[in-house]
Image: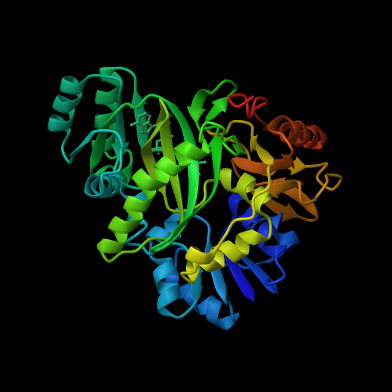
Length: 420
Ligand code: AMP
Ligand code: GLY
């Protein structure tokens, strides 16, 4: 079959890498793709936010299946347009993507389904929001309602910080995303990510992971899109995963179906775990980046069969073939990230790196420039390895990092520290 993957990050490179290994995949196209994806797929120039253009491209290229990587095209209804045109697609409708696109909507679904999450209140004006903060007291969490590229959440340790966040959000710093604000109880515990395929009715867990959001070692410094990840997440034991399915995921999927907006795609549940009990921090309606890279490294070719089963409503009969393995990915970013950074530096040493079923360097912000791989973004490479233990996976990933010659880049040296 002909498969189109929308996106250009490390997440999409790892999806392409897994899909390409499946004999069902004849032709693989990535739009827009990156220098790493160009080695295994045709890269096409396409505005992935334009549903009409994506449908036309899919029809012209006899695409049988589209995998949507990022949330923005999902929230914009690209999956709806494809399905309306009869093109099979992995990813939720715009109505179901509200689980990520609106934090207030997710809270409503939690209320209706009884899913445990932080207590909260919603505001569209600054004065009552500030009164609420003074009444509740810090620590407290202030969230812009809409999509804010991962920057719309302020975990305030003091009242003043929370009050300043209110001014920023209603002051327009987050654009339309900040027109409504959700203020939440601060939850203590350890965070983990849980990935579940949903076909509208049935659910199938496909793995757990932990991300490293802060830029600096020991989880210090500003937030980033994610500086590294590993899978599985030891804190998310089978027992806690079962509880999360029973108390959070299945009730959410049932409530979405009851509303006539069934959820189809991967549901990425951010969980806070304390005393053996999971509570929902947030939903995302796509794979995490870089969590996807470690999940794909562990799933390999079966990822395509699972995504097809999901899109075709066959999850009740689908099974995941698990190995007792571990995967870890180290993000290499341009110096300066998540602040300002330069583009255009040449990355050397990639040719000598192993590319096997257990060692792979996924590209994120890279382009090819006259035969050289050149940095073209903040997060640039995801050096990923699999092993019998987390330590083994980590050692192999860092050995690959050592072989990469890129003075303008950096990485965290402590990915996996919590679990090790
Ligand atoms: P979100 O974008 O909702 O995942 O929030 C970003 C990060 O803020 C999360 O990964 C958590 O580390 C933190 N966070 C969000 N909500 C809460 C909460 N209610 N209590 C504690 N930490 C939170
Ligand atoms: N790594 C966090 C995310 O993808 O949202």
